[in-house]
Amino acid sequence: MAKQTELRKRAQQISNGRKKERQSFRSYLKGVRLEMKKVVWPTKKELGAYTVTVIATCLIFSLAFWVIDTGFLVALKNLLGIKI
Image (tube, rainbow, N blue to C red; front, side, top):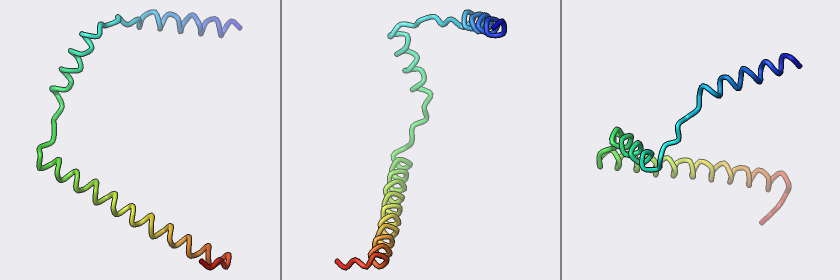
């Protein structure tokens, strides 16, 4: 019991030292604007390359899942003797 009380006191001391000052919404937006200026945006050429990569990856995975799904379907049909 004494140990829990000591832990609570210690936790209270730590939380008292960390009180944050509440910032206004306008101040928050200024911070967002400053951080957005630090972002390195891709060029049109890079963005096009990223887009092609994402679409190609989606197509490859779609094809792979279709092949696996069809394989399982054929295996289950043969295993259960179902004819469609």
